[in-house]
Structure formats: structure tokens, C-alpha cells
Image 1 (cartoon, rainbow, N blue to C red):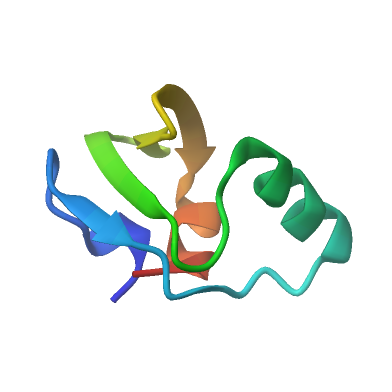
Image 2 (tube, rainbow, N blue to C red; image 1 turned 90 degrees about the vertical axis):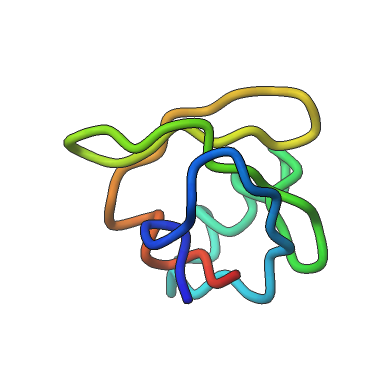
Length: 70
């Protein structure tokens, strides 16, 4: 299951991130988005979703949401 399929308001644990881009992986890591960390989808938007990671909120696009496996 990926993040774009997640239920709003439910906390999930990140199983893997499959972007294929080391720079993007490093950026996500700096946000606290990496394996075994909790993540919550706050809301789904037309072009992606708003997620909560370590008490911060981020807007991510649908392509990136599909790369985050939960």
C-alpha cells in the first residue's frame, strides 16, 4: 500500500521509500520521512496530499505519495 491510498487521519509506519533519486531520498530523510517512522495523511488534495511527520505538515505531490510505501 502506498501513501496515496492511505485513510485520512490514521497513523501509518513507513515501510520503504522508492523514489529512485538519491537527492530526493536525502531530502525526505531531512524531513524525518524514512523507514520505520510514523506518518499521517492529514488530507488528500487534487495533486497529492498533506502529511504530518514528526509534528510538522508537508504538502507532497501524488507521484511522491505513490513512492512512499506504508
